[in-house]
Image (cartoon, rainbow, N blue to C red):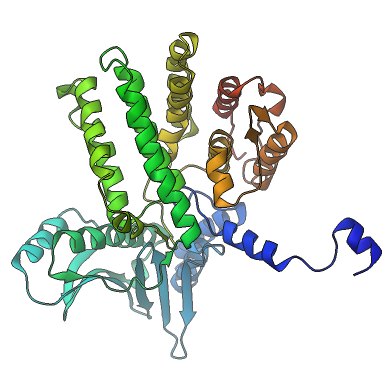
Length: 446
């Protein structure tokens, strides 16, 4: 290595640093969103539609699969065989949808579980669930429970393929865990492609999984359950969405997190806020009793193709943020800064949990969480210190924001965030100013 290489860090990269960076790049925050397509990918959808209208069905389907494929995820594979047929694989969580396309039929199937002996309760469950499906159906092939979707090839429009395959993939990914959990006669199948978190990542996430729950429950017990019922609700819901985004549990643990969220919102008119808060507190307390090895079973990542939530106009997210910001002021003015921060976090986190957000918004939410929970990111191995010891890395934050905006400038030409309006006096002021700028984001594409 020459003198200038030594002075300016040129030459061979440090293998340990390359390995560290590669490991960090595999850590995902939040759920997969297919609302992240580049402008070129979005245009492939319109090309597929035009080809279908021109009766060029084969070309339309090939173009549709290119639209569906996320190169970074490597989630969709389409292969033309020697006999002219196409075969394909679509990855969704623990499931792989497999199928083929010939000159007459489009067929897709996915295995849910292996049934070692016949079970009337299992078959009854599948029969009941069939009524909720629009495009696919449950079936039994030899000793395997499956889901199927098929159609005459010539009526396979991009819309029909998208919603049919999405129903097949997302329902299968959800139901395989539930079925295996609920019925001892069933065994998991076709899940060898999932990647367990590395041990170091699992340990950090497990520690914070427990820490955040314990800290939240302890803080809530210090408050008057009646007069602070609103703030307590915000704290519990923010906890749910933080675990989902930061820890990204799967399988049974994800189902439990979603169930706890539903407990709060279901029968809202019939229960007081205090009662609903207590239900969530009990559920989280029970979650703390899960053995460590049981929790770690659901610490894995897998490829995905479809979002499990639907996109919404930016105004829906803006309404959630605006309402939370307004409710924050009482806690700030009455010297409850920790609650004020979680109230603001709720407004943004609720949207991230509930909707399929455009990638720039999800990336800005990740930055928001990195600033507010820097120690968690540091322990995972990230070197960026955006906020530490009550000091902001102002230039780094502004540069990161501009990098996020710049990536999708061709798709959203009016997208901008005025970093000069950010307030770096303290964390509450920063969060409020950051969220205020999120309200003003413009996703018009013309």
